[in-house]
Image (cartoon, rainbow, N blue to C red):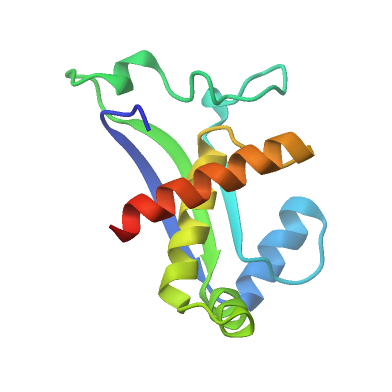
Length: 133
């Protein structure tokens, strides 16, 4: 993904905590599967995509710079297991899918438009296939 070193925080929660986080963050009711919180200084201040340059150049090379901190990915294990069962997936594979999805959000991908959604979905499947090898 073009990163020599980067860090992120991964938090695993239950549906109750995720529902609260979803309500407080987005004003939405109920739990969701994954929420990502990018580090503010990496966000394009104009509101645009960060996919072209997701992290500072120093993090893209093997340098003495500390790793870039991408942000936090929060995943509800209860929702992951429920959705896996509903769709006939092993829950661990769906967890990997949600983790990749969250990381892509930290790197600037989104799914606000059909084109963005298609690009993010394709990249998620591509990375999941690599992970499964």
